[in-house]
Amino acid sequence: MVGFTHLGQINQLRNRPMSKDTIPTKTAPPLEKKTTVGNYFVSNYPPFSFWKQEDIPDYRKALGHPPKPNTELGIYVHIPFCRKRCHFCYFRVYTDKDSKEIRNYIDAVLSELRLYAKEHFIGGRKPKFVYFGGGTPSYLSESQLRQLTDGMKEILPWDEVEEVTFECEPGTLREKKLQVLRDIGVTRLSLGVENFDDHILELNGRAHHGKEIVRAYEFAQGLGFPQINIDLIAGMVEETEKNWKKCIERTREMAPDSVTIYQMEVPYNTGIYKQMKADGKLTAPVADWETKRRWVNEAYTSLEQDGYVVSSAYTAVKDKLKTSFLYRDKLWAGADLLSLGVASFGHIGGTHYQNQHDFAPYIECIDRGELPVYRALTPTNEERLIREFILQMKLGRLNFSYFDEKFNANTATRFKDPLKTIQDWGYATIDGDNLFLNREGLLQVDRLLHEFFLEEHKNARYA
Image (cartoon, rainbow, N blue to C red):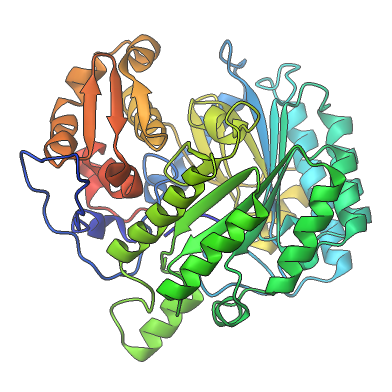
């Protein structure tokens, strides 16, 4: 689950609570308090709206080139099936596919991987990390899971894989299925909890209930997964102060290896937006940005009392030495990502691509023996620098010398103006080679990132 606000609105989002130890030299423009419609969460750069069909030839050229030295390979598999579509979901998902269609889809994903395995850019490489996202990967049956993963391992062996992440909806998990996930090599089980209250879960379109969270978590703990992560969302429809505090308490009682917390957004293709449009409303029926940031901060502060460390804008980990997010860290450092399945996003040899974003066209391409790419973009060297810089800002700290060496740039000079801006606003400090975001900056990092965008990208729709 990832987050959501129209790019053109981001520069208006300036609501700025001040940390006690920070005194700004320049006041940030006020942030619009209410949650409006559009994407807020920044997951890539340049924005997806700039990816075009006419750039597919660049993607095909990238396939024919050998991999860049020391570039690791990951695999993302999109499983677009769900029991229900959440009202805040903006991903490509289907709730109407039968078992035959699902098996056909798995066959198509494996066929897609076989097509890639023949391409020059693979060059005998093996994946270092694998990520199953959705939709609901845990919607698959035990036999479907084995069909998919056994097939993948035959095509590109997993003997060098260091991390396998698998997203789950708690209500789809039984002990037998969890045992299969353990057997096939899942190292991080990510439970899409979002909230513990049945009323809020139902109101927001979630398929599971609170008791299913407890049952799935206890089963998973008993099977000894190396890492169990739970997702929460701050600011769901009708969420209250009392409810959020209970969510924090329940999370602390569970004591998972890591906790991921997102702030509720309302992209354009969500059920909430469609209802807002029908009702003629301009703002979403969720908590405002100031409240959501405060709630996330309260959660982090409580978790820190239990020994957790906040390792990114969205994540707290119990033991930093044992808990990794390889998929995130490698992807944000420019790794190749071979993305499979309908509507999935990938990155090959410096070129971004997205697959066909509807079920039938995706299957039809595979049946013709064609890679199902819908659009692509090859960033310039400057855009690649911006991409890595802003994504790694989400970690709350970075080293200028890393970017200077990798991109042959003077990063502090290149980003002098936006760096000064976020320092003047009281959100960041520079200490020699290091940039640090304070907690207030980290809690609203996605809107700060737009200060680093090229002008042509600042007032365009993100997705």
